[in-house]
Length: 410
Image (cartoon, rainbow, N blue to C red; front, side):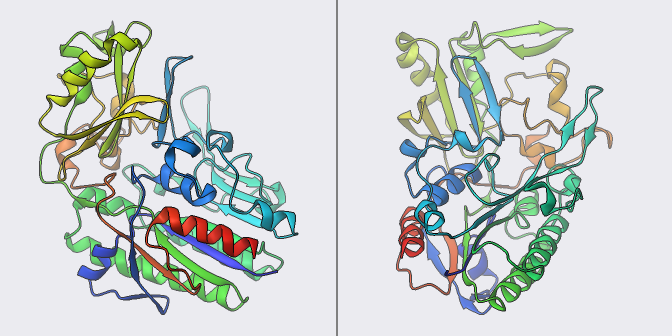
């Protein structure tokens, strides 16, 4: 049975590597590849796993708004959220085994091994750090990841080191699955914090190339073919963030509840809501008749470059102009912010919040200052990097996923 390691490296942009004179990864020449739209983690990984466009796999962002519940869901891990057949189905039917490590929406996936961050949120508001393992014996009850390094103010390349150590140990133990699909988030954090030209980025690049080399060397010793690919390229923030939900609130299209002076969204009475996710945003209208008014309201925002209709369950998808991004807040004054605004709370916030990468006024709070964000992504007009031992001529990530399917079927 053929063996293949697919290493999906967050924020591995082709231009970033070129600007830092990196032409090879683990000895493999680097070439450019067009990514998908929107260029965000969950959408890219869903495409890699299905070789389907967004309209088919139905994962248009890192979060979703479920109309029946009138509730947003960010970073939920159920594999059933990603629709469509997987690229490995024929491979597994022939006896090949698949390991999915640290991919989003991986829990319950039809594979042989799964590792994923899965902390337990306790009743008192605390958190028990834990890694989901299938089968349970895969980690022998241990938690190999410093999850406070995975996201939040303490997020750092150290989490990548832990992922590489875990996968190298899995390879060394013998009998690892023939298809390994691994996510490596090392580059993501400082690029969002500081942008692409900050001095910290060079050390991050040295770190990620070392991590890639370690894992690839271990896999090559066991006769694995290699495919290294980025998911999106981060570009510099050069203008203030855009706040589409503030525009909806001002136009009486978004309703809020005032609780102890804090403004919470009332999705049950709102006529529209924008689910913000980096440089793209999904717009949901409760009534068809409001669509023209909502579109007019959001099209008037100077940061909005493009509006696309009917995007995977949403009424519209917004794309930000290059240099800016969409922030989820609907309030103007700090005292109006809901309680979760100053905490790392990726599931409750109805929108992606990169401000969580910074401490707030105290070490017990995260920042709400959008001006601190210096890097963003989501547009698909900047290529990602690809390096592989396979003979693949794909020029886009969707073509690459289809080529992987054919390779596994052969």
